[in-house]
Image (cartoon, rainbow, N blue to C red; front, top):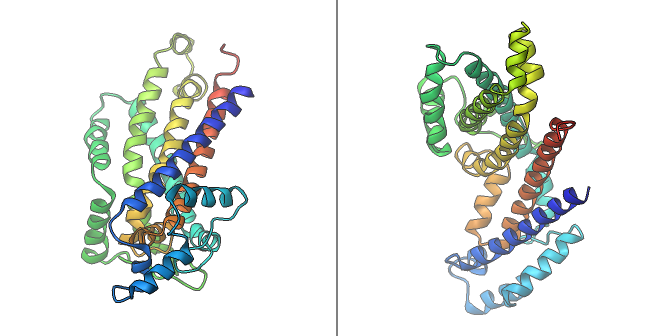
Length: 309
């Protein structure tokens, strides 16, 4: 329990350091928050008044301490345009959660199936295609893949919509509007995790107890589920936990391209406004989710290794 608590504290400290880096990075970006809000024609007096209102006239360490102290009490502050950051997150996070959740489920199911198939049939003609295919999808950036998907399935074949239309609920009005964004997010992660699953299963299959199970005449399914997968599970779980962060990062690009109403679009707009509070709040939420998923992966690792020490 002590080691788990220490690990969580270490990750929380890393998250705070990351947030401090976000504050410094946004502050160093060219441009001015007050001018971005008021426009280029704003008078110097108006700019100065807006900076005072937003607290931008204070030193950066003081602004960061004030913000992080508020976060500790659940107050993420207000955007440069006056809206509560907490309300903005509540409004925009569910669509991103839906998009990322579907992409994660698709990634887990597809990569487990493909990775297990690849590991069980190494050297076959069909599995040889997975080597170049997974390498290709991992190497292609999300914005390139999204553009190709739009060109092929939206503009070329006309099967799926190229942009997202939002209803009153804040979600897409039609399920088919999720297909291309989900594919653009999930395809690179399926490629990467398929390779991880295959490698983890192949390594676990070399263990002596697996050879004994084969000699005992157990079926391939029983050997895979009872003797191979439990030993490969820690590596696979850690890879899936890392995938959550990659999906959240990729959503910035994908949501912008498909006009999807989520945190990605909010983050892109807040960077344009030099709105540090919004950028830091999105990073905080994303970081908390990633830390939580890593904790789950650690729990799975501890469970899979029970009785082996």
